[in-house]
Amino acid sequence: MDWTERRERLRGLIAGPRCIYPGSVFDPISARIAEDLGFEATMFAGSIGSFTVLGVPDIVLLTLTEFAQQAYRISRAGRLPLLVDADHGYGNALNVKRTVEELETAGVAGLTIEDTSLPTGFGATAPSLIPIAEGVGKMKAALAGRQDKRLVIVGRTSAMAISGIEDTIARLKAYEDAGVDMLFMAGVKTRAQLDAVAAVVKLPLFLGSPGAELYDLDYLSARNVRVCLQGHLPFMAAVNAVHETMKALRAGVAPADIKGVASADLMKRVTRQADHAQWSKEFLGAGLSGG
Image 1: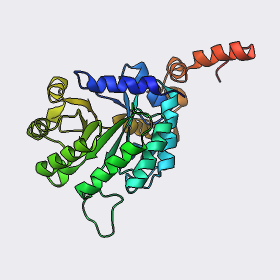
Image 2 (image 1 turned 135 degrees about the vertical axis):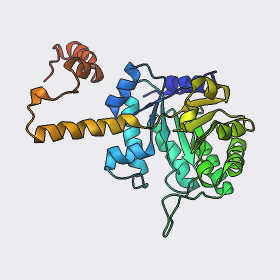
Image 3 (image 1 turned 45 degrees about the horizontal axis):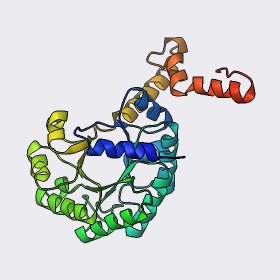
Image 4 (image 1 turned 90 degrees about the vertical axis):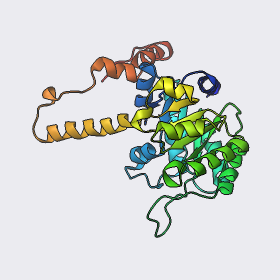
């Protein structure tokens, strides 16, 4: 498949004057819902990948192959640019290079590489960061792994919550100098923190689920933030909906009395039934009936 147009669209968004909230997605159906509702882009997080593919906590048990396969399923289901959280690149700098190669092939429009020390080491009681020099090596390896120059490479750090604002700025400036396209910060809680960073780095900023006082698109846009996550509530809501539906059915509630299920029309829309019916008519000489 040709992913060019959506990568160009993401670059246009990043270069534009406004911040966006991407839709948090986890499978083809959620990606199509985000598209139908008018989101400009989508985001597939590493934590959500662990939940969706393996049903395990976000402790880096998911492999690159598993993550890339799910990213591809999401990419091919719709037309929105897909941003993904590639964690630490699944290993050292050489692993990062391969991670970029695989995710580029999977159709993603942008990906983040972080400098957290992962997976958690023996005896560790709190998250830690790799040295800045190692982080720079990972960013350079990510750039070397990229074949399509339209793919957006994002340097990510969680330093704000781990080592403070001075280290955050030092890391972001180093990754900026390494040549990444965008800078991601996790753990930003206050406007003072964001203001301090925005004043000294030049690249567009990407925020991961920041503090409540930062959810103001005018303010974020003025601080050169171009993407801001709103958490990953759609997956959590889906889990709750499945739990409550199964609980009710197990308790004896009649199927006809279950509330909150998707209508037949919504199911037809998100499965693109009209398209498949047309293709069946064109290629098979018959219509497609739903079961």
